[in-house]
Amino acid sequence: MKLAIIGYGKMGKAIEALAIQRAHEVCAVIDKADYNSDEISMADVAIEFTQPDAAVQNIQKCFEAGIPVVVGTTGWNEHYIRVARQAIENGNGLFTASNFSVGVNIFFQLNQQLAKIMNAFPDYSVSMNETHHIHKKDHPSGTAVTLAEDIIAELDRKNGYLGQLYGQVGEVSPLDLPIVSKRENEVPGFHEINYTSEIDEIKISHNAFNRLGFAQGALLAAEWMQGRKGVYGMKDLLKFDQ
Image: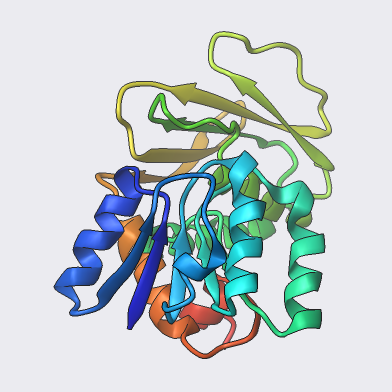
């Protein structure tokens, strides 16, 4: 597979190293905002890990180049419906995920199942906390938002979420799921769901030790996207619903 990497930060470098290990050719590395779609057109697939304000422009350039794109950037959700519709209407390939780690996607399934169970036990209040490195721009994290949306879909007693930074926590409506975000050091990613009652507490969590899991999942998605058109995510890749 010929791979274009858009964004050459720590994730981009990790993806490049793993791609080379897996005998793929990294034919383009883009680490600038101003580039031409011709610079990536020789690739079979592009992987994009940049910043929220650059993601949509990068996706558009992949569409112009006629190559499917795997997007790891989070924080651009307000544009997703428009971009996904464009991909479908114009025959482009788009793969997005709030988190590419296989372990995190297993965690998503556990979270959804636990929320279904806990809907019958309203004495338990639910909350979430997440921690990431200081370079992460968005909060709550995209992973936390996915976890929250899955909980809200199953719990009748919640209809939204409220994200707050650690140290700036204020009053939360009973109808909202509180998410407390920490940004410290070089933490790859930690997410914890808490169900608490007067008599006990139930917790599930996922703790990433490094970025390898994210790079591995993104590369698996890129391999899977070769020649594909349409809009996909990790459930399509991992076939959880089958």
